[in-house]
Image 1 (cartoon, helix red, strand yellow):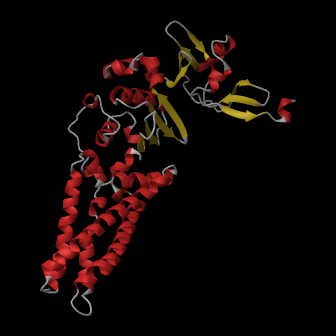
Image 2: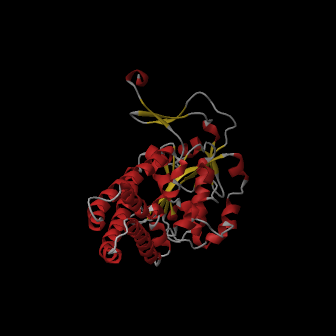
Image 3: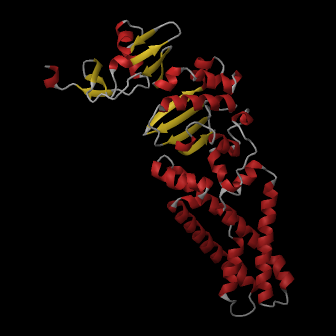
Length: 371
């Protein structure tokens, strides 16, 4: 089960503080008792205590059945979370605050209606038949009893409880992915926090992964992603992979890749990470990560409309667009090259470029073009 399932109440309470499962038992028992006592008093049953003892177990069992059905209904959309529209408008809001999106709000109403219908039928069949005196009992008694045992905790936004006393990134040092409330609040400190639409944790198998969906970030995205991945690896003890998805493209960062930059990211301070990116090149140019051991920057000052041929093979031409090919620069401690020079001098290969973060247009060579 993915950690994000734990966002639902009362599962959130049980995961965060396991002993609260006892409170859940007590919560259900108290409300079932209220519902049953209400019905017995309303019909002025002389054998109220006897019928209470005979029925309370059944009603308590029905309340737990409704808990399980409610959780199952809330988890169903999770299996379609790879569909971006469903993830953004249904899954993520259900995990945190279902009242922020129209679709999730409608879904919650539907869940409530299903739970009410099932609860009403079960109470009518297994409880009401045991406590009524003659022909029937008023319908409103059944309605009230049902309303008493609906699992309302599932309808409470978990964001109401995801508070933190942590006031800076340093406070999150040593955080574990399993501690969902800390992850929620850590995300708020990231460079791309305002662009994150959804995120989820995958701790089913290693490598443990933290995934983000991002939108509307159109400037120097790779720089912000690499910085935030470095911060996450530094602060979260058991994450091995961070993935940012922007415009249907995945930017994947593994801890070993970040360690190549910082040697041992866990041993660094947040100030070390910040200082690394204070070089003026990161501020003045567009950063594209690494090709081999060289940092790559687009130093173009304006967007060129025409495509520029980088290289070709037997079947395809490979172009750059909206950049000056001569302005793609590769830097190391002691050397610098233009991308074209680096290819010509075999400092890097075509495969290195194609596997990099540079945006390259690949076009099939037509017969007319080849001639």
